Length: 346
Ligand code: ASP
Image 1 (tube, rainbow, N blue to C red):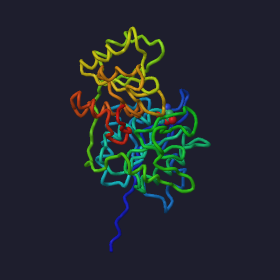
Image 2 (image 1 turned 180 degrees about the vertical axis):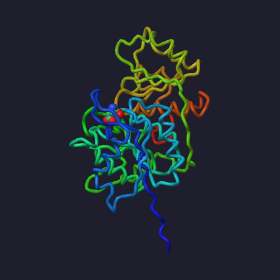
Image 3 (image 1 turned 60 degrees about the vertical axis):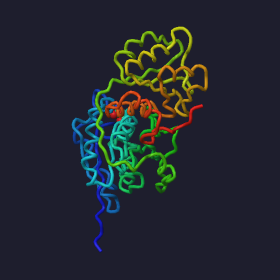
Image 4 (image 1 turned 45 degrees about the vertical axis):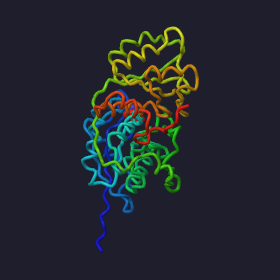
């Protein structure tokens, strides 16, 4: 009987702290620096370790500079090479990793293979780097193929990519997914949470690459005393997708100078307004309080327990598909790629 060859893992280095070099102007990625740091980690070349290949993007970027064109490039590389590899590791700066992981979860629907985002808070070449474990464990997860979705591994936990958020600017446990349990925890062994892995993500979809276009999207964080009138022109004339970061369960200030007429006008001019919460966990529940009751009649939709990162990525996705406004509104409230927990309205 011939043995089926196990495919290697493709490690895509996009930039980010894990491969950065200290310069006079602060940390920045430098070509070839990361690959030479890898040679100092013998475990990666161990016989029992999954085979892997490195693909270095050009230019290498601090993730603050990663947006739609880079998402399109990373997703295209993965899609085109999906049959050559058992899984993918995307090494990425931590600052926008949750946005990119969310974006790729929509761009690569039905891929059916692990895509593991990771990085580090301390460069691989520095003392006490957290990059070594993050990299080694991510390659193992990508090689094992137990998860077949876009996820994010950091500090011992594997999180669903479109549920993750960066929660610490300097801690080594820099990510969390407060509204969704970890897909796996890596202690002495990697323990997968199989029930959670099986839920929510629709794997029956055929592999599709959905590239994003530069949809004009805005995020408005509500705060006490906000003067809504100042935002009227951008919201009604310039933006297609708007994420409102509301108080608590979806509440906004009412009364004089309220946001509602602006939302109505934005909706009439083709914008889709999605209400997310400023709280990292819990869900938006429009209509629970008087202060959210009129949002729906004004044309806004509930983002339920979606992160702002996922809501932004989903707006890019749905608008890039060319769907009409009503279809986008409907889909924003439904689970598409495991990004939200659907909830019956009150
Ligand atoms: N500024 C860096 C980046 O996001 C931070 C990091 O990688 O941790 O690229």
